[in-house]
Amino acid sequence: MTKIENQEKPKSPPEPEKELNTKERNIQNYEGEIKEKAIKVERERTLAIESLCHKAKLPDMSRALVEAGVSVDEARKRIFDKMIELEPQTNGHIRVEAGEYDEISVRRKAMIQALLHRYAPTKFQIDDQGRKYRGMSLSEMVRYSLGRDAEGLGKRELASRAFHSTSDFPEILANVARTSLLDSYDRLIQNQTWQPLVRITEATDFKPMRKVRLGDIPSLKLVPEGAEIQSGTVSESFEEYRIATYARKFALTRETIINDDLNAFTEMPAKWGIAAARLENLLFWSIFTENQQMSDGKRLFSSQHGNLASQGSVIGEDSISEAELAMSEQMGLDKRDRLNIVPRYLIVPTTLKTHARKQVMMPTVPTNTDEVNPFMGEFQIISEPLLNNDSRVSWYMAADPDQGVDIIEMAYLDGVRSPMVESRESFDRFGTEIRASIDVGAKAIDYRGVYKNPGAQPQRAGGNN
Image 1 (tube, rainbow, N blue to C red):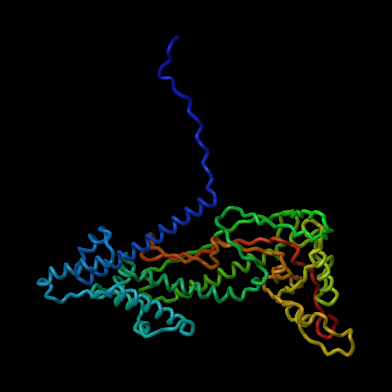
Image 2: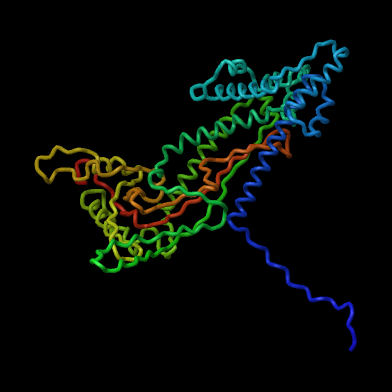
């Protein structure tokens, strides 16, 4: 037999890349957060050591201490020892106090407080520390922060030094921008009209999410003595959607400092906070105005869903009763039982707000039983301006989600329900970039908790409503 040498073994096909499961993604996200926190801690350590060395007039010592990885306390001890060693050369005039790094933190907090108070005195309070900086311009704050290093510097040089890597002034400006943005967002979001109707959930990534809608719990059955308990099955359906990122960025430049432009990092971020809240409002109500399509191929409001009036009519006793009846007759997914859904909210465009109040809120002084207002106190009115864009006469009724029928779901990445505000040193210009972003998505989940009437124009006073 002939021996075959150097015969190559057949290569096995490469293994397909393994898709990360939820646990592995969570581990990666956790590792990313740990890394980000470590970078922040390292930056603060470096800043503290450089500040101590600067005050001790030992700038050449800072690099060695930073690279050695020593803690701030250990660095303070070594600096003090070096000062003792060099005391004859310094004539005993240099002292490093144990709380000097704390002093930097206090000054930073006080400057942030002073700038916010200057922006909106009635919203942001100020204490004795902040009052020291209340009357200072941005350039004066930079000069105060730099101390002796600012001697002889003009506004241009001060502005450049403000954004130097060893300065904490970019963090001061970013913090003020972040606070003004979130303050405006929080104040507006609390009064959004969609809040009572939504179900909030968390998204772990940007992949499509399937919202499984379980069928209704089967009715309990009578069990005769000695008989076997029957099993109950639960049907299900699902809706699919994903979240998306919405973001903007702007730069705080040297011109911001030179021009003492407080609006650049207060009013502009505040407007972005308002814009973020309006975005969520638009995402929600566009589901109504666009009549979003659902997984069964039908629109949210449709005759097939049994939640759309056959013809438009004004808000009144007959039309509201028709809506109540239609909602009460909605069936479970398995079509076995009626859900007996009770409407809680009357939803109207602002053009119908007054008319709606007259129909369901105003008491009457009846002369006979036919004049009694049967809906007095029955419904909460939700009036939304965005509904005007679709129709000035259409109106809706909705159940409280607590009845077990989710209407619309809104998801946020990792459950973060407010804009993320981040900052970094700009690579394109001298300054700091501020980025505001929000990761959110919304989808109609169940049509059975809402009802639409295409509406009609109410008659004016003197006519019949």
